[in-house]
Structure formats: C-alpha cells, structure tokens
Length: 596
Image (cartoon, rainbow, N blue to C red):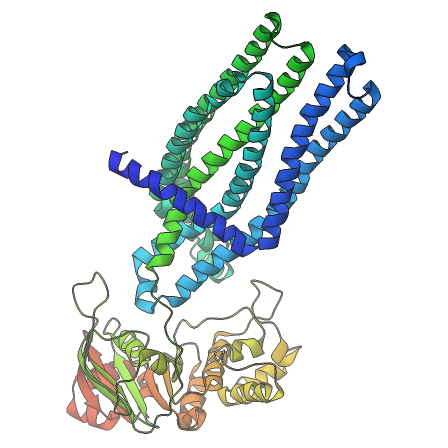
C-alpha cells in the first residue's frame, strides 16, 4: 500500500475505534456496563488463580512459612479457577445481546440514510452498490467490534495484572512476552487491508449471485422460470458465480491462514522464551520453586491475555475499513427533507419548460415539456415505451426535481415535500405488501393513526370506492385477512384485485392530485370498463394524471398529451387529436385494428 494511504489509515483507525465505542455505549449503556463488569471479574479471577496457585505452592513446599494451609489454599485455587472458567459463557451471552443492540442501532443509521435519499440518488447504480457493500460487510461488523472492544478492555486489565505479578517475580519476563506484540499488530493491519480489498472487489459478484438466488427461490418468479424451463441456465450462471467466488476466497483464506500462522508462531516463541527464562532463573537460584510455579501460571495466563489482546486489536483493525465505508455511506446521505404539508388544489398544476436527465445519461428523458392539470380534471399521457411518460409523472408528483423549467402548484412554486404530501402515485409495479388487506390500504398515509374507528371506516369506504370491498367480504377474516404467501399462509389475490387494492390505497391517502401509471394493466376488459366508466366519481373530484397504453381508457380524459422522445408532440381532446390525424390518431387506429 502507498505510504500516504498507510499514514491516513493509521491516523483514521483510532478515530473509528473511538466512534465504534461510542456506538456501543449509545446502543445499550447498561448492557455495555454489565459486559465491562464481566471483563473486570474475568481479569480479577485470573489474578486470583495466580495468587491462589502461589499460596498452594507455598503450602506444599514450605508449609511452615505458608500464609494458608494446604486445604484452604486448594479450595481457594478451585474457587478462583471455577470463577475464571464460568465467566466466559456469561460474557459470551452478554456480548450476544449487546451485539444485537449495536447491530440494530447501526441498521437504524443505514435505514435513516436510505430514507433521506431522494429517488434519483436511490435509483443510481453507485448508491445501490455502496448500499449492497455496506449491507454485506459493514453491517456484520458491529458484533465483531463490540466483542473486540470488550475483549480489548478485559485483556488490558488481565495484561496489567499479570504483568504486575511477573514484575514482582522477575521483570525480565514481561518484555519477552510483549515482544510478540509488534509483529502481531503489523500482521493484523496487513490482514485488515487484504480483507477490505477482497470485499470491495467481490461486491458486484455477490450482488449478481444474490439476484440469481432471488430468481431461483422467490415465488413471483417461479411460474415463468418453469414455463421457460429456465432454472437450468440460471443454475449454471449461479454455479459459475460460486466458482469465481470460491477461487477468490481460496486465495484470501490462504493469506489469512498465513497471517494467523505467523501470529501464532510469534506468540508461541514468546511463551517458550518466557518459560525457558523461568527455568534458567530457578537453576541460578534467583527465584524459588513456589515463585517459579506462580510465574509459570502467570506466564500462561498472560500469554492467553496477550492472544486475546492481539486478536481484539486485529478485529478492530480489520473492522476499521468497513466502519469507514459505513461512515462514508451515512455521510453521503442528504440531510433529512422537511416534512411536507398537504395542500388543497384550487387552480391546478402547471409545468413550464421542464427538462430532466438521469445521472450519467447523455440525452434528456424529458425535454422542454409544458403541461397543465386543472383542479378536478383528468389528464392523460400517452406515447410509445421510452417516450418519458413515467419520468414526467414523477416530476409532477415531486419525486424528481426538474433540471430546467418550473413546476407550479396553484400558480406558486411550492417545495417538493409539499407536492409529494399532496399527491398520490400508483405505479404500474405497485407494491403488494405482505400484510392484511386493511394494512395494505392504510399504509398510504402514515400521518394518521389507523387504529381508530373513524380510520377503519375510511379504509372500508376506500375499498368500496375502489371496487374491492366485495372481494374483501368473501375473505375469511374480511379486511383483516393476511394477503400474500411469502411471509404467512395468507390469501393471494388476482392481479386485477391487487390493482384495486392499490387504487383503494390511493383513495385512502385522500390527496387532491392522483397520478395513475397504467391503472388498468392487470384488469380484464369488463373491470377496466367499470373502472373508467365513471372515473370522476371514483376519484371523488380529485385531479388525475393518467398514463396508459390503452386508448380506450384515455378517450374520456379532458385533455391528452402525446409524448415522443421526451417531448410533448400533440395535445388536445380525443376528438381533436383524431381530427388532426397525427401520431395519436395513428396509434389509436393501430390499436383499434386489433379489435376489428
């Protein structure tokens, strides 16, 4: 690694460790305190083992000078040994609880970041890759960091206590054991750099493999995969990804095994040197047998504490790059947008000269577009695929901000959060929540408490207006029937029924403007006719922007905009556009010909 990068990494690591310690404390202060008490007890019990061992050796070798008799000394040694051995399982379970709390806190930070991200940012590949990398690697580190921090604190207490014992016996023994520290730390830094580099390189490959696993295991894809007999090719692609991951993982595992072996050899060499030094001191008469026995116990325990210490340092160093990646991701998120205020729509919405280009794209998805949606009007957007209809609809709804031009609400340029709060959007690929039917409806308005009788009545009325109440009454638990089969053994609806649930969701939200992106895509002709026969009554006087490929659905619109290559090329009523014999008339005749 470049010297400048090494320096930056070295200076950043302590800051990240301090930040991680702060996260542990903020996640569960009481739990962290209990875990710290366990560490102190563990260090104290280890020191008690050494002291009791010294008393036992004195009682065996020089009973006339022993402070305690042999039986009390042995009982004390057994008690300290039992306490030292039992504290480990208690620490493990406490670390498990604390690690879960820390993980929840870190997840909350990530979810806060994703919630703040605007739609353009969220849909960008860079954000998606960073999020995937954080989910795969950084979010698995809180438990490791928690364990390493607690292990570090406990081992520091143990190292201090054992070092004090050895200094009292022979100061030369301490530097012999500590000599293994520098190589272990350097090897840990090497391990952390290789691990982060490995994770960074393979993020894209892990994303592709996870996508293939979703295709092969999730219910929405099962029918098509079996109809096309596609599981074989997908399994082969999945296996190829596994092979590539295994090849890279084998190389990384060999590196880590080499690092672990070198670290173990260093600690073993230091332990051997310390024990040989004790033998030499006994032979020279500098210490007695009782001191030598106590020193041997202390050396062994100090070696274990140093192993924990170095392992904890290594865990923190390995986690530091991932924590830095997490911090970068969280810092990259925009500030939380202000909460929008729902507005009435007295005049209408107007877009003047609006243009929008997706990041990294050369051509504009929407180019110099002017449209108007008056209060209470139903306005349609038509055009071939890729003409910019959905992008324009997202601008109208405040989900995208135009790069050029203006968006006015009742003649004023209002903040995007207010536009979003005052608009309801039903996308063609709307979400089918694995929740009850009632929850599927009321989820569209989080500003209200859905548990009141009044809100329950509103949900029932929205279901009635959307034409799904009849189906709800035939369900076993009515509006409280669980929908979907992915999380619970619920009831799956037909495509058209799900579409009406989405419409009920929009009506429950009760905004003055509704954007409908292909609202009849899953409806059969009869259901489509019923939906649009009296669409104004269904919408209850709300203004609507309707995107549809079915011209039978757009005929009733007050005004129709025809889009082509990001621009509005025609505008008028159905009769006016047919009379002008332009693109709309051509597309309408092509579609009508299929029914003749």
